Amino acid sequence: AFQVVLTDLQQSGGQLWVARDEQGVCEGQLFLYPTESGTWLAKELLAVSDEVANALLQTAMKRLDVERLTCIVPPDHFEGEPYGMACSLDPLRFPRQLHGFMSLMLD
Image (tube, rainbow, N blue to C red):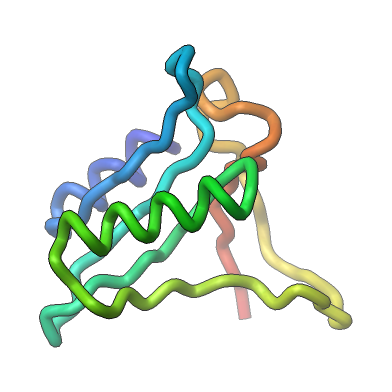
């Protein structure tokens, strides 16, 4: 499943940014896709902390030389009933704290 996500990312001209600690352990991943208007959309942001997430976003913005980056995030307090399917994306690659998953919503 993770290979499918990477293939989609590559075919769309997107980029994957990875944050690693000093020992090389993955602490965050940012999946960026270009938009038709010439901006970038962060479709997925997985991080072990808010500091890592902010560092990924700031670094990507600086390197891409953009002032604005759209990032879709779930609400802090979701009161509804979640629905859909989730499947683990290569659990050997993702640290347990990242809770990496791909969501498929069926309406």
